[in-house]
Image (tube, rainbow, N blue to C red; front, side, top):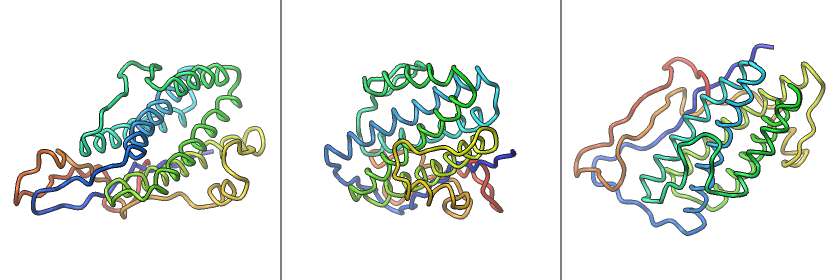
Amino acid sequence: MKTVFFFFLMAVAILPKLVECNELSDAQKQGLQLMREEEKLAHDVYLVLYEKWELQVFRNISNSESRHFDAVGYLLETYDVKDIAFSEPGKFQNQDIAALYETLVTKGAKSLQDALEVGAYIEEVDIKDLQEQLDLNPDETIAAVFGNLLRASGNHLRAFTGQLSSRYGEYTPVVLSSDVYATIVNSQFECGNRGNCVVPQGNCNNQQVNKPKRMRNRGNRNRCSNN
């Protein structure tokens, strides 16, 4: 089954004057750090599973997770939050995530079905945690990034469950409620910001007065590509 993935899409306003950061709560700062390591978890696990099973869906989505990891990194820099993520694959500051990594790669090595179920589970966790972060009512920049990450995770969940249903049967959600899961998997693939992927260069700590943020467009002007 051919699965289409979308480029991660993220929108940030271009400001003509000095950008000032809103002060984040401790919960929001911890949330940024959590999502940074969760995106790394997904990337690292999917790479291991691709090497094991050589199924393209794992490679495609691992590439997407790398972009998501970078996007959260921009937020950490922008809001001057400490980046706790290691560069070494499979290594994490958060001990719960470190233990989860070992559990998931072990399960994913058992069979291709187990590997695809691992992928679906990771995306369920991402969706739950991203929604919890959005429920904290972040400012529009964080909300835009997390909203696009949430849409991308929905796309990835549909990709993994589509693979499972075509090969082994229907997937049963582990983290999400049955109603939330059904809504997501029965929805169409989504893209954000009308196909334009923009990433800020620089941050609110180094913007100059009367100079707008420079943006890097990684999207397709006519359609959404991989998320």
